[in-house]
Each structure stands twice: as C-alpha cells, then as structure tokens.
Amino acid sequence: MPVNVQLGLRGKPLFEGRGEITRTEQTQTGTKVGIRLRDCIDISQLVTKYQEILIRADIDSFASDNINLGVSADYRLMASDVLHLLRTFRANLDQFDQQKLTAEAEAEILATCEERILPTWREHWHHANALVEPIMEQPLELRATKRFTELVLTPEFMAGAIWNRSYVKPLGYPGDFKIMSMVYDWQREGKTLYEKLSHRLGLDVAECIATRMTDMRTAIAKAVLSAPAALAENRAVRIASLGCGPAREIVDYLAVNDLPRRTDFTLIDQDHEALSSAYERTYPAVVRLGGRASVSCLNASFVQLLRGELFEKLPPQDLIYTVGLIDYLVPKRVKSLVNTLYASLAVGGTLIVGNMHRCAGSNLWPMEFITDWNILYRDAHDMAAFAAGLPGAAYETFYDSTQRVVMVRIVKKS
Ligand SMILES: C[S@@+](CC[C@H](N)C(=O)[O-])C[C@H]1O[C@@H](n2cnc3c(N)ncnc32)[C@H](O)[C@@H]1O
Image (cartoon, rainbow, N blue to C red; front, side, top):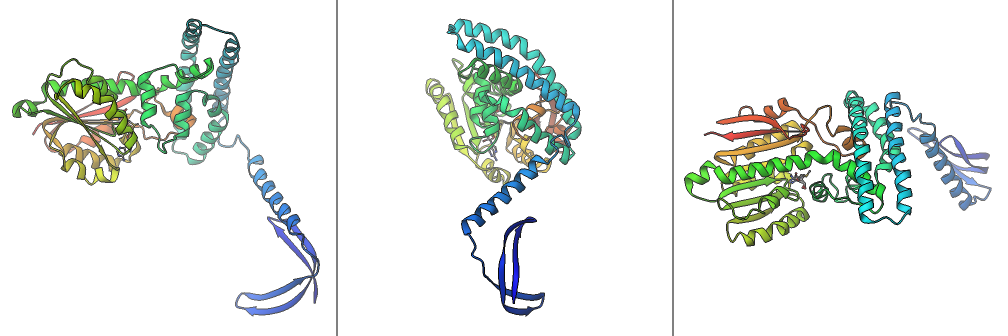
C-alpha cells in the first residue's frame, strides 16, 4: 500500500518521500510496520540536515535562555564595575607596554597602579561577598550566578597567572603546590604589565595562605624548642604535616643556622610531585644541618589516612598540622580525621587544624565564583566542634592575621 513517509527530529522535518508498506506485525504494544522507500534518500543531505537541526536546537537552548534569570541586578552592576575597573587599567597599561620601558620604569608603573587599584578591588570583592552570601544555599541562583561570572568576569582575570592556574587546575585538583608556591614567592609574574597587575590582585586574595604558612612556621619553632615529650625522653622532636603541598614553612624554618634540637619532619600528601618538590627544597638544609634534621615523605591517599594506617606506622608526634586540606571535607570526615590525628600525638603534643574562615572579607567570591574553586568555609564554632570530646584535650581557636583563616589548636594533656 503506498504511503507518504515523513521523518523528523525534535519537531523539525528531516525527510519526506513516498514509500509502501511491505510488512505488518502485531506486537503487545501495537502494530509494527515495515516500509520500503520509493524515493532515494540522499544520505549526505540527510546528515547535513540532521546536524543543522541539532545545532539550531543547541543555539536555541542557550540563546533563548534569559541570561539574567537568577542573577540579581545588584550582582550584574557589581560585575560591570569590576570589568570596567580591570579594562581601564588594561587599556592604559597596554599603551605603556608599547613603549620601550626600563625595568625600573615598569616597576614604578606597577607599584603606582597596585597602590591605586587595590583599595577599589577590595571594596568590590567584599561587596561581592555580601551579594553572594545569601545565594550559597540556593542552587538555581548559585548556578546562574557562577555561570554568569565565568562568562563575564573570569576571562578578564585569566591574564593573571595565579587566576589562570586556579581556574584551569592543570593537576586535576584545586590548590596545587605550584599555586601555593606562587603565593609564597610573591613575584610579579607575567609578560605584560596588565598580566602582572592581574596576578597581583590574585595574590591579594591569596594573602591569607601566606599568613597561615608563617603561623605554621612559628608553631614549628615553638615545638622544636619546647616539645615536652621530646625533652623528657631526650629524643628528636617529631613534626608531621598532612596535605603538606610545598611545605614552605619547613623550607623556611630549616634556613636557620642551627636547630635547637634534632627534628624529624614527616610530609604527607597525595601529590607525588608536591612531595618531590618539598623534598628537593629541604634537602640542602638537611645536609647542611648535618644530621640535626630529617625529612621523610609519605605519598598517601585520603582513604589511607582516614583508615589511620599511616599514623599507626609513625611514632607519636609532637606537632601535627594540616592547613588547606579539611576545607574540602564534610564535617563527619573532618571529625574522624581529627580523631585519628589526635590519637597520633605524643602526650603534650599539639595538633593544629586550619580552615578558610567564613567572614565579610573571606575568599568566597573570588575563589568560588571567579575560579570555580570550591571549598567549605568555617567559623570558630565549627572548628571547636571538631575538638570537642577528645579525651584529655585542651583546645582553643584562633585566626591568622588577616582573619580569613580560622584554626583550632588542640593540646594532648594526658
Ligand atoms: C591547598 S593545598 C595546601 C598545601 C599546604 N598545606 C600549604 O598550605 O601550603 C592542599 C594540599 O593537600 C593535598 N591533598 C589533597 N587531598 C589530599 C588527600 N586526600 N590526602 C593527602 N593530601 C591531600 C593536596 O595535594 C595539596 O598539596
């Protein structure tokens, strides 16, 4: 029986022609019909049309999407002010780049621009924090605002090395040891003046990583001088860093002329490259200090850590610290980790655990929205809860000098 055949895709016609029914078959769901086409199908034309329909459907999906939906007017205004600020500096610095400037002149221009841009940048950043705080628990608004930011603002920031690496995450995880090192090195990175300025804005956000690191260096110095168990047992002081990254606080600490006491450092990280880099940076000092210091590296996954396997193999430690790690973990996991680490302390030993702090000037907006670097922010109350109930423990919470990192210090009294 002759029939008209119409094929369609997503409501659009794909093929029309004549055919005939050659076979019918009754099934439980209805009648199956076999059709022989009488008109030839031009396959390449069919494929082209098929692709065209799909492409149009794709374009419809994003072009008809109201890009403003879920993004507040205040947020859009703030984004446009930030863009205007950055582009003003970019346009003018690009002109300086055309001139043959001496290194001194470049440094002078950058120093002046930094001085001018930083206060305004901080105002925008803190204002943006206030704008996004209420949407953090609202998935639709959060997704729309993040998408808007990544389309509108992120490309402008990508000129800065630290923004770029934070967004791209080339090692597959955020906050790798190379980003940490950028913060500690505090160099003017980039080819153009604008690239250097943009990098500097990123360093401003990351400043608390450096202050947190110096706090850990101070804690190391204190432990080496006065770890009670090491003094009582007349043995080396034992210090472990979990999620050590580049371990810059240890590299810096080992720059001392002489160590007050023999010290054994254990560095633990899931990234082999981070450990190699830390080992290479500490090795010259270990040699120079002639047996007064040792550095051992443990490459371990988080699962291994939580099982407590690693620390079971280590002798009791006088200082254990972990900063920049629990920010990625839900409370239940942190609690379990803190229990494991506390159990691995010698009596009199100290455990320090740090987390980014939820506050008006926190890193929330730049990290989460510009670089899609997701972490959990915590306050002193949250941190104290991780220490609560540990047997024989005394604990206190404290902040780094920027107030953007909150830490809990737990001492094993008995
Ligand atoms: C943000 S960095 C902080 C590094 C260092 N503590 C600092 O402040 O410079 C986090 C580090 O934790 C490490 N890390 C992440 N997940 C880990 C895991 N499951 N086990 C061990 N290390 C981990 C990462 O490889 C990275 O080096």
